Length: 286
Image 1 (tube, helix red, strand yellow):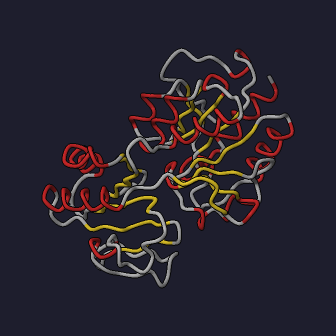
Image 2 (spheres, rainbow, N blue to C red; image 1 turned 90 degrees about the horizontal axis):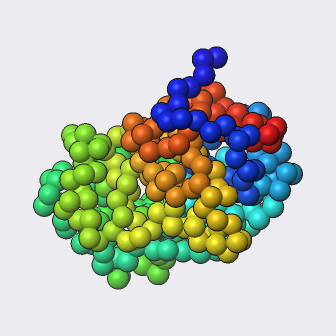
């Protein structure tokens, strides 16, 4: 297999001290395109844990979509979900350990701003108990039975699930280019939340101000006395950027978004080529 090109002078895994923690995105990074974890990757994750290196899954997915990796989290059992809005215990069925919510008032302000700046935007509200969306929003086939109503209704105090925290607001546009939509939204409503994206379509993910994969990972590392320099991180999309630039060592997948490729210190093979496993194997061999 042809070796991935490095965007900057490479420091091989064996040239740096062994990390204390590995943080990896899931979709487009650890998972193959069919959303499975290869046998090679399963073994690499287990080997890292046996060697005393903690592994954190850090994803935009909600806790209820973590079954694909729940059997492969060892030791602490924790995962960071919803782009940093939730820390969950996969050993206890996705039990919420920490929540960093998006205030409903801020979510409403984003809805109002994007309705003006990008007419045709449709919204979904991701709460700790499930997702709810507008009639025009692309349906979630993995979440049957979700309540469908205008975003203003989904965020009001009288909503049946108003007592559960909002983890993310999602905004979708049928016509705008994904990166252009992201820039437009940040300009129009950036004061109300943290905007990012991980989908190939024009689908934005909005968290509370200051909430990101990086800030929640930093919190989890601080609790363990682990410094950023002792973390190796993997990712492929804009919602991974803060985490990748925070970690002492970062790897972009060969299939990564151009901004991710430009921001990382290293590259590895694509998610279909077990790129994460290949790096872990080199770290352990070193």
